[in-house]
Length: 214
Image (cartoon, rainbow, N blue to C red):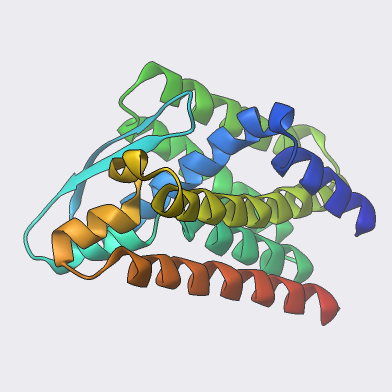
């Protein structure tokens, strides 16, 4: 576990590696928006991923609940996926998790609307395919554990970034989901930031509990 944690840290902490793995975290973030939109009856028109780790998921539909739910589940998405992935591996569902992730990545190509985003999805799907076809079950488990932990760390990093936008880089508020939710609902941004934090920290605690229980 220490070796796996070291690999996860190497993916998600140093700037050199984060510039690549962070794009995957952004993809998961935008998929969180998209899945939440679909679950509330909205239609997803497209997802874009950009080199600076920003992105957007465009959806439409009736009602006021859908946009709010979709807006909430961006920053927590990497933590939710990371915790679910870790739970699946620990409980013997590595192959199912790997297969489901690969299918989701392939389907995501249908809604990506920019070339760089397509490259990010193809690279992610390529890693998934390589693990599926060439890695042993043990290696698959180790790799997915590292990715799960890296996603959890990435979610904490994303939370710190968006809090930093609200405290010291307010010129970038337009990029914050919390600010966009405030504009849509009138509920202050700190409330949405607190919701993000509760979900993310809760997922990290759940993941830690899953590991310690074994």
